[in-house]
Length: 302
Image (cartoon, rainbow, N blue to C red; front, top):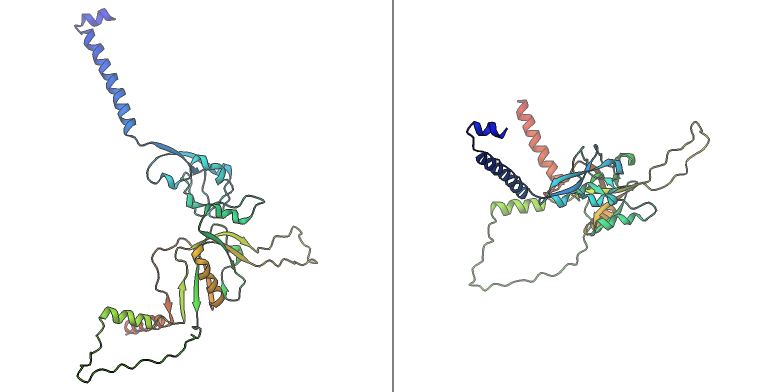
């Protein structure tokens, strides 16, 4: 073989050097590509679609390798698998999707207190929201599942009478030669804000938690009887219907006062929360809306 190559006039040494250069360049390029590639981490992903309220089992999770970037810490790592088993899905997770930490509510272990959930949420409380209260409007208890996001709207029909002590206003005497200072004329923006403040009186409605609150537990669902066709027995189940909410500590007083003084509290199921605050809605806003839409309807009819 070598004699044939030599007979063709090909320099063996040139061939060997060319092959060596190719191999060195190939390995150098591979090493350079590996050095420039970001490091990877092993995270948990969904083996199949997980719906809100599902309880995580070992067969629901797979390990997936992703590039380690600034968002890698948002995912649950492979080392946290044991703590995720038994958790409740708070947000829908699609097949193959890495599992965000915020997508799982860690329940209390079997036989332990419900407050064990708070170990994962410092600064939060488990607040009981009674759905059978007289001023509460909510879907049927069976419509709720742990992990659902709900909003609470407070409706106030009348403002409580304010206790005030009348005080004598001091009389200011101006010198005779002192000119009377005219009242400053407010700007258009100031006048609009003042008008809005004057009209922010009950009846009114206001969303308390724009970002929504998560349900950790649903209590008060009557268990299904195993006896079929027996009409002689009656149910003695009398547990209050209640949602256990994962509520920030600073919001406990706000919701407690709303339960005591609100004419209505409306509980709504939410797809996602909002970030921007709302202005609320008053009866006077309804009057304005009614007048505008009535005028538009009449003009359109003509």
